[in-house]
Amino acid sequence: MQVSLASCSAPAHVGEYPNQQRVVGKSTSAILACAGTPQKQTSDSERTLLRYYREAPILEESRPVGKGSFATIRHGCWATVVLVDDRVVDVQYRFVPPTFDASNDCEEIFDSCQ
Picture 1: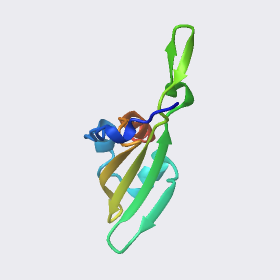
Picture 2: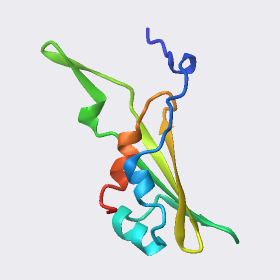
Picture 3: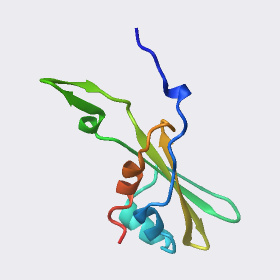
């Protein structure tokens, strides 16, 4: 029998992270060059949104126990880059599941953005 406690847990705190802050002010072309092609891109008359997703590697999702290991929660992170006038004005992270701090997964998306 498997019991899920995810619905009983509080959402993980989404704070401000170094790579997230570092890309603010960069151009659209700079973000595409360092972070790659987004999963989804949408635009309206005021802004452009680039949505990236990174899932934790398989090895990160298992924990060693004695001579074996057991699987932990699959997790990842959505990063939404908000651009206005061809410049990043905000980057928002959303953890999947929301109860798991997957900030390291989102931060990896922007590791090449120096």
